[in-house]
Length: 459
Image (cartoon, rainbow, N blue to C red; front, side, top):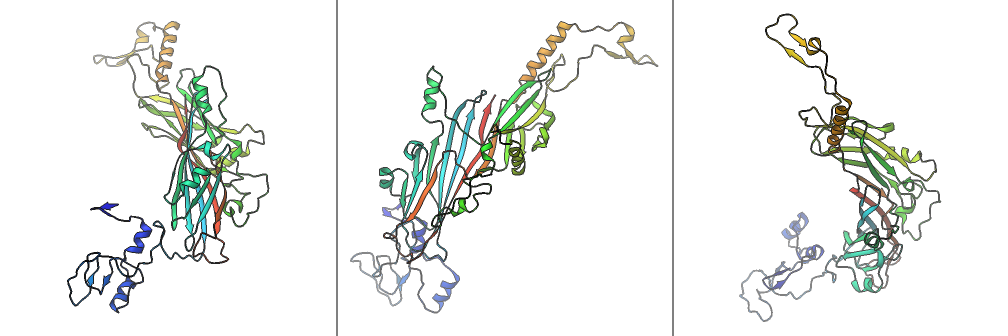
């Protein structure tokens, strides 16, 4: 930051070294005349008041604040984003990679777009000034998969440019965002598939769950059905034995390799399907979930239906696959109810049939004031042609009340859509300072995929 032509430091760790924050201990030390333990450029000085190089000073017998450079240099860190004299009793380093999935599918199931936005969060609780090297790998190469990367100022960009996938850096103390990126899961082949006339096969997305909507069901076209398809790969069970951790690295994922939510056994957690509805829908009748899988809720006049499936119910659905490899599915069905009725009795929600019998009320008559027109004469029956036209009008009106899309929200531990993974995390002993001999930091990695209404299927 530049204020009045003076360059100032705004890194929080550097400011902690320069600014003496008040505390109870420092107040007690000041009362007994002892100096503060934290260096500060604003600390009182016993030297005369000075204004930089060659500045004259007005004397005075008491101490005055010194605005120019002091004789003793403060013990600040040479790295502006890291505090000096960092000490930790337990030296630990954690890498957490989180990717947000956004997929749009056409009514036929063809993917229109598939983007994964990733964030690499790093937690460094290491004494001294460590110099780290993080090596990333991805199917097809990091340079071809990752696009639009952004980095923390601590990353040496020259190393990444020369060797994509290698992050060399001196981390700040604590948790921070090391890098962010974007991955096009369809790749450049998707553009050719949409622009050329010849049919081309798009890459398989292999995402945890997809959804499809079948609308205008039933004799009047007022029913719909939502089908949730789960990928059998995310059962949370691993057939391979747990791989031992090497040198402490990856112990966060290798310790429970046989459990759910690891890199060898990714599992789907709580899942929510959202079905948006048109504003003209007044209610949903006969809203039911097949085999009781999940809980569907709808309030009259709401903007959509929320269908929630817990992790336990997802595990039950996965167990029904029986190794067939075709996955498993859950069904949600309902009947729409419209909010308006025209002059001919056509409505998008009720099952009432237009009656051909009318009733009149005569105030002059005593008994039998309610007189049926059927008693006065034969009823006029609707012709088959008029009935077919009325049913067709009902189906057309109900079609406007059908849901046009559905979205899926979920989270998966131990899996990333891009396939990115951490190959190694090494500490350069020659460049690091202050760690101490024989100290090996604990290392761990976690992967997480999150989709908040990210998988959308249109119909």
